[in-house]
Image (cartoon, rainbow, N blue to C red; front, side):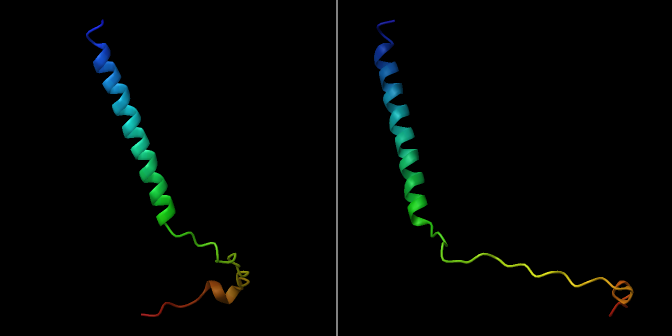
Length: 61
C-alpha cells in the first residue's frame, strides 16, 4: 500500500487543479458575457376580439 501513496497524492492534486481550472474558466466566461439589465419589461397587448367575420377570412394566393 505504501507504493500507491504517491500516485494517490498525484491523483488528488490533479483533480483539485483541474476542478479549480474549470471553475476559473466558468467565472471568466460569466464576467465576459454581457448582461442586459437595461431592458424594460415586455408589455403584451390584448388580443383582438373574435367575431364571426374573423373566422371566415379568405385565403390569398
